[in-house]
Image (cartoon, rainbow, N blue to C red; front, side, top):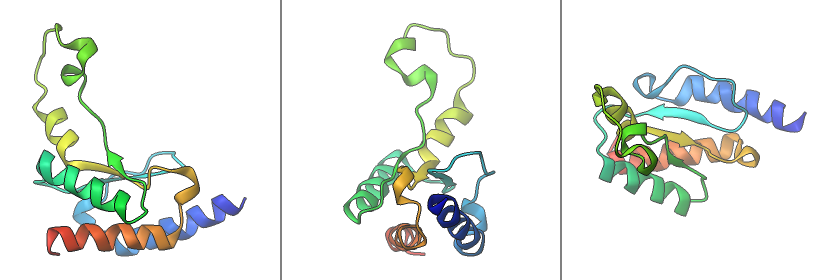
Length: 118
């Protein structure tokens, strides 16, 4: 129950503090938010994830498209451009069920904004 109350506080803060262009539709997850930063490069995404982790915020790359995964390297690819773009631009914050606190969410957005100069 504590985690749920904490989650609701973070959701309210996220709705107010997250830049609208970074918000993604919510999904039923009690452990992370999907944040999309349009125009992000893979290198910059990695820099952001590393900086967040160094600041104590569990973050990770959003996902890797199927056609870029070793198991599917020999499969035919149809399209894939949108999946590649989203893979570069999406970060999961925080990626830890015990880390859903307003303080960590604030730290996350402060670090990301500083790195992006926003």
